[in-house]
Amino acid sequence: AYQISQYDEPLAEHGTFEIQNPKTETSKKIGITRVHLEEDTGKLTHTGKDTLVDFNRSSVPLVEIVTEPDFDNAEDVKIFLEELHTIIRYLDVSDANMEEGSMRMEPNISLSIISNKEERMKNLPNYKVEVKNINSFNFAKKAIDFELIRQTKLLDKGETPPQETRGYDDKKGITFSQRSKEEAQDYRYFPEPDIPPMVFVDHEIEDLRKTLPELPHQKVARYIKDYDLKYADAFILTRRMKTAQFFDSIISDKTLQNIDILVKSKNIQNAVANAIINKRIPTSISQEEFLKEFIALHKPIEVDSEKLTQVIDGVIAQYANQVEQYKGGKVGLIGFFIGQVMKEMKGQADPQEVHKILLAKLQ
Image (cartoon, rainbow, N blue to C red; front, side, top):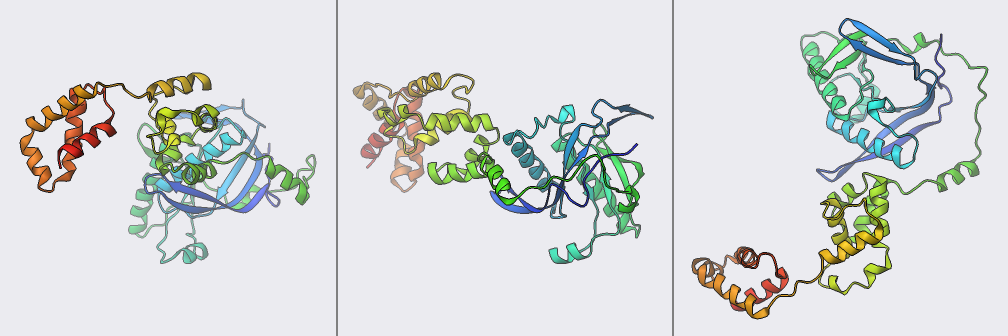
């Protein structure tokens, strides 16, 4: 038996993939060594001392993506995998359902002491440990973290970790040895006579490129630039293509352009994003229903101005000490007064109007 794969002529090679850390809002480029097509051979399930072989996926085509050693920690790997997963679904390459085996991760981990990136590329460690068939982003991170500790302990004792393939036990949170790992020559590559090479000319590649949808990182940049959204909000909106498409359809609806009730809002797009992200309005409803609920949600509250003034006067009288502190320079207390007024009004007041009246009365 043998496995069909690409070697000399992969689908793509020498690419880059930019990841963005949503916590630090920093970006980093990861090199893509190659993207090649091969066939699935099957699935191994290890249960205790037994290994079960499932051939249901045999000969199903798959795409393998090989990265450069540009990762500095397991968290970067997790971010890369999550972003890759999102793009695969955006492009409709695969459903990438990991519980069904449609996407699997196989990190290669080896350690050495280096002083800079250039040295890392020139002096790679003389061994490689591969952890096979991981089906969870969190498990991938945990497996890498475990290997970093395990291999560091061996190297600190002057031992070189054996070149091998390992599995990951998600219940124990450890990796375990499966077999020694082959060198490239052990794979015995030879041409597949039944599959001729595919040749594309430049204009065909360009035509295909034009069919690509706007990718997640491009949407994030557009939302920030065009709608002044915060990075975190833009990031959340673009994780699922359907959510991003729904957001785009809502903000492009002409109904929003005629809504006078949001004149006081600095940014209608931010208000729509907030309603979607915080699930104040479900996205499972139609666009028309969403807009109706959105309008109702932001409809101005009609308040008896005399009653509001009385409540504000009452709050100022009740918190005389805080009033003195405010006048003494603790202007941040204005938020405290607004909160007390809104509490007394049971939320039935415009916070901006309350703020305006309080400023006038506290002068």
